[in-house]
Length: 244
Image (tube, rainbow, N blue to C red; front, side):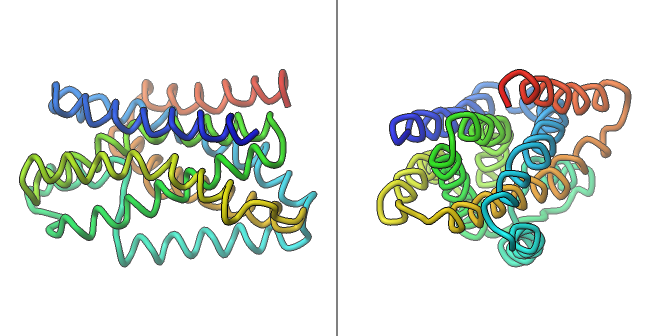
C-alpha cells in the first residue's frame, strides 16, 4: 500500500508538472481550455467525495459529518487568508484587467499547503483500502493539472520566470512529500483516526469543487462545460458501480 500511495502521489505531482509545461509551451491555449478540465474535475471530485470518502468516513467514525463541515469552513478561511484557486482567479483577473494576486510568496505558500494535503489524502486512502486509495488518487490527479497551470501562471505575473518555475516545481513535489509524511510520522492511525482523515479528504474535495472548479464552469457556461461536468460525475459513478 505504501508503494501505491507514493506512486500515485508522484503521478499527481507529474500532473502538476504537465500543467506547468502547458503554460511554458502555449500559455494562451492552456488558459483557453482549462475550464473544460475544471468542469470534468468538478464532477469527478463531487462524486468521489459523496460516493466514497464521506460514506467510508461515516463507517469509521461517528464525528465524520462534523469533520466534513469543519474542513469545508477551514478551507474557506484558509483561502480567505492565503488565496489559492484552480483557475477562476486567472480568468477573473483577465476580465477585470486588474491584479487579484500581487504577492507571489503568498500564492506559493497556499498552493504548497494544498499539495501537501493532497498527498496526505492519497496516502490515507490507500491505508483504508486499495479501491479507496485509487479513487482518492484519481480525484487529486484530476485537479492537479489545472493547479499546475494556475500556480505557474499566477506566479509568473508576480516574479521572475526562473523563480516562478522553481516554486511551481516545489508545489508539484509537495504532493509526494505529503504522502511520505502520512506514511511515516503519521502512519499507524487508529480506525477512528483514518475516518477523520477520510472526512477531511471529503470536505476538501467538496470545497475545491464548489469554490474553485464549479465557478469556473459557470463563468464560461454553455452546453459543453455542463457536459464535461456530467461526464466527470458519470464516469466516476460508473467506476464506483464496477469497482466500489
